[in-house]
Length: 387
Image (tube, rainbow, N blue to C red; front, side, top):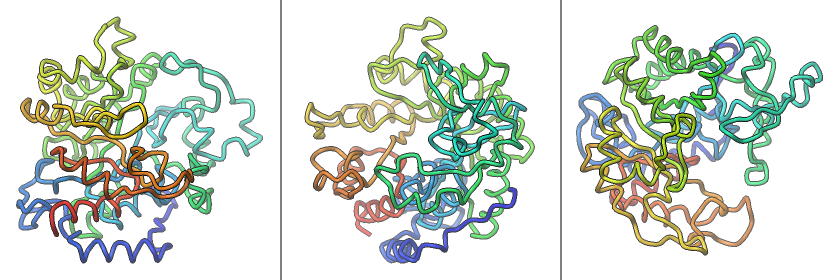
């Protein structure tokens, strides 16, 4: 995994938080290995259904505390008790390697703008119908990308994270797979990851198909089976369908706002929206090739015009009836990302009441949740389970 080193030990407060989580039952965050009690009291026997429930998924690692999609972020997510790490929003380089970035445009997540040798690479492209200006991974070789360093994506909300700007390089998916094995050995329990294929239709049109590259690496490391500790996800159903033909891994369809259309639907002239996909019929269709859905939290509990939570929809029950698990996204501690009735004050970088929000979402019966703050999620789960 290159010359990078994890830096989870840097933050004493994080360690103290982890200790508190352990006291309150973070032992349930063990990943359901045989003989290990999971968070809901069941004993795991392998496979994604043996994960603790509600499952805590470290969103891009511990991105509430470190720049996202770095080994520093991934490592800290595990240290804070995450059951699964979303290690990899996967995008390709010009020479065909898969790297982990939130988007192919890297102006906001790396220090590329400070590299005069790459000034001429700045350009405008149409990404899923949206004109986007910046620097794109597909215009760089892996060697060139490795000269860059990660920075905090939302410094207005997370000024403390800027302390770590420049510390970590961009990881490749292959490095993540090796890191997963290393962490599994070191921690004595199976580490799970949850990579996503990003903009697969866009990249396939460029001759940089993602799914075949993902499958090739998973096969290389023996992680392409139904009980492998790698859950794959995408916002484009056709990408998930393609993966279903290539690997045996558990698969999840991500779902955005109800009135949106997956980009592969737009490209293919499919008129269906996300609202169509969350009907019982739509969920049955998803269940024909996937094992779960990753809906936005608003599909589970909508908000009113003032941003307050209203009543839960029937999505959880409908998905479970179709045999699907639900891992909605994304819980964050800061005020702007919380429902209005759980905010405290108006500061953009101040914490609201995420514990109150977690409780309401957990009560719907969701199987897990993506969170930027794994320690908060672990403690909230312990509260919810009465531990």
